[in-house]
Length: 145
Image 1: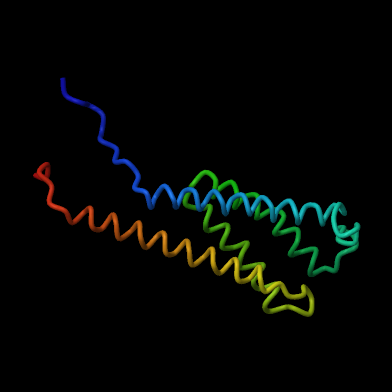
Image 2 (image 1 turned 90 degrees about the vertical axis):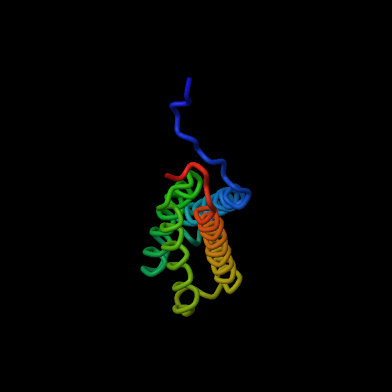
């Protein structure tokens, strides 16, 4: 009897490591989300970051990030295509906050560098996976018509 099921290729080591990387970024997104929520409800910063005590700039940014980061974490954890897109939105908001509006938000250069490092690592993983799939597609196969 012939196999009726389609042959599903095993993921490469690069793809497995990429999945682990995305889940690590997902865990950090949960951490950032918890920090923003703790600030907004007055649990951290001695209650000084409570929503009703924040400036309008901080209200908008912290509220947006408190919602976007858990969504990014879910998308990254599930390894779906929209997860990195949502993370890019959250990272872009924070980079703009701390790099372009330091008078309102202060500066956090380490956070900006970490976001850039994650973005570069993501691009390198995607390039490596693309190259592997390209090489595999160019190989001569005996099952080709």
